[in-house]
Length: 491
Length: 36
Image (cartoon, rainbow over all chains, first blue to last red; front, side, top):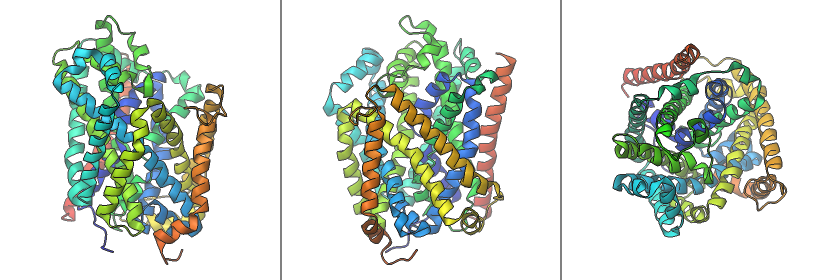
């Protein structure tokens, strides 16, 4: 097998990894969740869990990928033991399942970008445009194919010529778009109310445990920690590359993008909602969910942007930012999935084609049914926390101190890794997982009367059935999968 | 804008963007130093 390519510079890795982390969730989910949790006070747990959950797990992924030179299955198998390959299979499958419906979401962004350019979003209004789009399965499939095709084409060209080169253009462009959006939003009359809302902290609200759980959830989902994506990108880095500073840069870059998106969206809503006769008050509008939580970005932003000067141009730039964020994350998901097949002996180009086609076919149910998409988002979104926990289990089985000494400290780290890493991985990350998963499962149980029903979108039953099936199959075929991935390599 | 909101904005933006900027600059300087 050919030696794997390597990113040509640290900057190349960083833009690819920030592209992986910054997705539609930063632009779409963060402003809504921040608004639902009071704005200013939410930022505190959100920052705390960046340091306590996301960055330690990004460091773990980075070290595992680099040491094992394999994707998730091989990395778990090689570092923890062949009988632990099923854990890597679950991590990989979880991100793969997200990729299936994420391509559909990226397709929505493409459709809205097209609608913003032609002006048809304004003609039909946000709601009318969405309803017409959803009523046309052919269009949904076409834009899903367009999104997965674009991302697949980038990965097909290779790590350096495809992923690195594309991200070197896409990520600076994304930050410029977000910065432009912020400047436009904060200069609108009334935008100051949005800044007040986003940043004014009510410290007494920090006594409410739900704010902390939402902060942890946002941090866990948004930074890409536990997805196995950074693990895969780290295969293509030098053994001496800095692990600590790279993980910090990725985490801070991701949260920086969220902040820009938050300021842009919240200030726009505060400035424009009062000028739009049909819209609810700004605080209420920011918290709307809608089908697949689309209400704010897809239904209301077009309505609101129509009210302002250069509204169409602003809408084009908003959806262009969403498209870039979605594609750069989709690229990482395709690379992660393809790498699993490359590890099993498939030629890289063939693996990328196979994964791209598979992602299209397995994404079709989500393209045709928003209910199905919402179900998958729920099941595998929460599943990501299980993935994060599995990384912590892997480190504990390897030996936390040994992991730090053998896999992290030998890198040329600008910042030292102290025993704080041991404490975080041994106690803090597992404790966060236990609390978070218990809370999410409790929510799933109480929010749905038929909590046991495996065919309901949000039920506890659907999570347990789908995870259980995945665990059962990966455990059952563990040896075969390990043999295919690791061959005769010993533990 | 409230004083509390201004203080929080400066803290959060300074922490996240200041941190990100410094880390990125340091990374790029190391890249240049190694001739990468």
